[in-house]
Image (tube, rainbow, N blue to C red; front, side, top):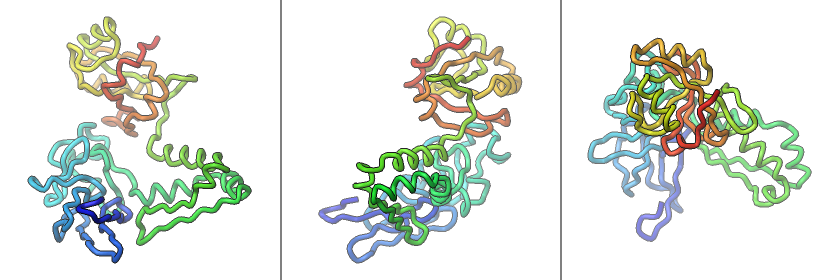
Length: 281
């Protein structure tokens, strides 16, 4: 962050919350309650605050992608768009346990950022470290007060030990994109419960935003046919299940949820990617 002609650096805690903007003498600290209320305003106009999300100073609300969060109330202002998969209270923030969980997308609770980083390093295979050591590299991890300030000295390692970088990237990525969908070489199978109107639209035009039937622009798919059938049975206007062949790279960047409305795991394809899906057999 560079207000005026000065440079300031974000300092995070284990939740990913900006707790300070650090200059050369370490000033401008910010403090928060467990649910994100700040005891003072940001003297430098920093908009990124609790769990790294943007604060709207006019409304006092945090923008959590899928919905808005009130730190004063300690809850979301809109119901969970995924239903009851994350608990029976559709407005609760991380099951009222903000010290151990975060909800970066406003969709479901997950472990804190520092927990996911710790897990990532625990999962790195020993062979990756061996490759790194043989290349003469070293890892320097700077964790200050639990903050995720990962300080790799890796310039030479990136050139001489690509195996470590590849393994680390795959490990961290796997912590954010857990899924059980079956896949072929280039495609992943997804199953969507649809109304008759949406089924007719898919038959004519393939998957697309805003069809004539019941649908949102982004589309959710169950990872199994059984899950889609369970979801269909919950809604009287859903008549059938369509199978989609989802390109692997589209699936990898999609939102994932471990249990959509208690019907099993699923994923959400953004509207811009829908035209890339194929109707499965």
